[in-house]
Image (tube, rainbow, N blue to C red; front, side, top):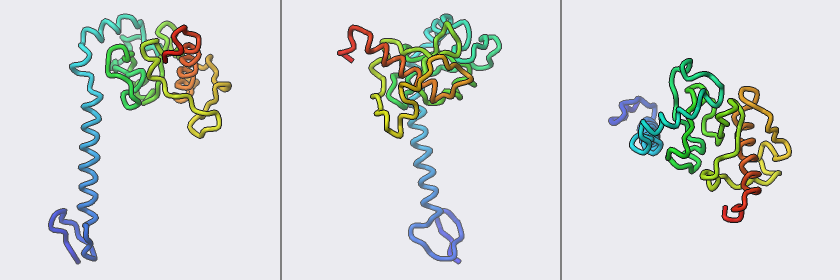
Length: 184
């Protein structure tokens, strides 16, 4: 029996490198990367509290589920275009959601219409440059072709992926109609 002097795990054979040490190093690496991601997404210092509360006053309820803010436990700052997908960490890219809806939305690009809760809307003009390129219809990545996008689908009947497809479809239509479409 062999005991690694670094991780103190017992093995039948002496292996180099020790599987216990390799696993410990990979856990440290994952923890370090997760910490870097958290600091990159951290809106503290970039969006002031008063700016967020001014934005919150424009929304009478959660734009996803329609619950009144008084009935919601935690109000989350949701990035419309996720930072992980290249969205800016700025007030113009923030929408308030209740914690449950923020978890449901995950890292999808969904902009909710604040006047009609649960309904996806086209991205605002200042977020149009962050639209991902349109995938070809035969691509595996394109699960919903533009002809299959049903803009009448709303939360909770639609999945987050369907809502994202609706938002992107409406945004592309909006970009085509705008006079500055050639600049995008």
